[in-house]
Image (cartoon, rainbow, N blue to C red; front, top):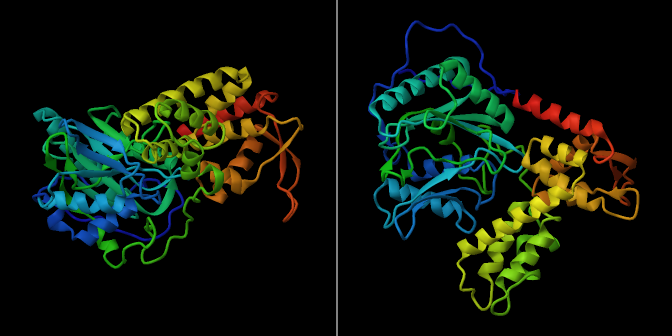
Length: 449
């Protein structure tokens, strides 16, 4: 198999560029190898830090078996990616005392990603194994020919017979662009997007985007390692030192041009929220958690509040009899109840607008701004830095959300920004502007296309 031509030219939109198709098919003829044989520890660290997508050191996927030997795939909250990457590599080298895998999410706080993936499942069926192998080969062949500016890693997902094809870009792209691009690849090779056949990452789920195990990592489902059939990525990473921050960009030999998400500081940080609603006496855990949820729901993004709940449990004195896992389950239930009650109180138009918003970040911003709009004054301030802080996104993203809400008819500008004195003021128009619902619905359809 020949390697794809790896260009470094900037591309503004992910797209396949039609090229003549040769009268042959792509097959993986060489033996696939373990990642620990192909890559050094530093290679694997650099690859995994890029797959973090600029997220924090705690936003990745844990892949393990618990004390009862049950398979678990869960988002990390306290574990650090840097430590788990080394542990995952030790597992691939058969030197770890206890096995673990690691995965990553194809999104960040700005709804962007520098990679995507195709997952072709087989589930140990001979017919499905053959199908997964053919689909992986066709996808690889198509991407080599028509997306030469992208870098590929192709390999097995374990002993089940499934295949993963990872696509890396030198640049960050909106996740909706990745979704359209990957759907087009699947459509071109005739692979139906359905569980058990072909899945794409980033998928269409509106919550936290599904994570996928890193290339070559341990699969707790069948106690096997993924094998690497082709690597067109690490040759671009060898000349780069390890990132000093939590991520590196895929711009060759350059420092990242994009900004990281801002760190939440002040009264609404997870640590301060946990301190404000600390557990300091027996039998008060549930009450303090409920109060934390009731306050945080109108102030910050759900993930910030959930981290606060984790900190609340960790720092409780005396230590609660309830485990952290059960504590977070109670948080999830309380948050879901708050959201259900809040949705019921929205006007019909507001509910239509909210349902029409495409991203979780926009829906969280809607909830926070809806709360800010409840004043005796006909308008209210929206400071971009404060909004970005509550959402844990960049200042630019906070500004973009405010501008987008104005264009959709959710907000109506009433007073301009006064340099070094006053933030811009806006009135809440979502409950009185029928066109806002139509605008949001049209935007969601456009993004899906």
